[in-house]
Length: 106
Image (cartoon, rainbow, N blue to C red; front, side):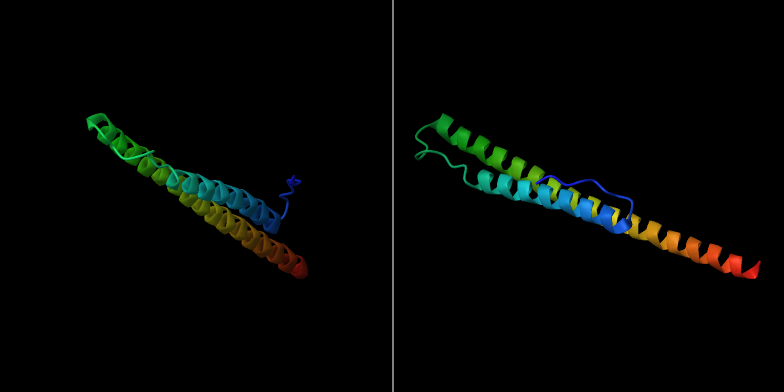
């Protein structure tokens, strides 16, 4: 689904960040599931087979760690965007109130 990128309000920025985070999380989930399904065919019969099982374990654990790390990064980035957008909105509200209050004194 295609979305128009409209980010002139904090709520719109947060919504866009949420869509990106959801997409990253979905990909992470699919990658982790696919890695979990990797399995050797048959049982090991020789030294090379045993060595390859070790390599398979390393590939699965390394890729799973990377996928999980990316998901954690997406969540942290979303948290930062929400905090920054909220802080900017709060500063904007304070500035608006200050300008409005100063006009009353003139």
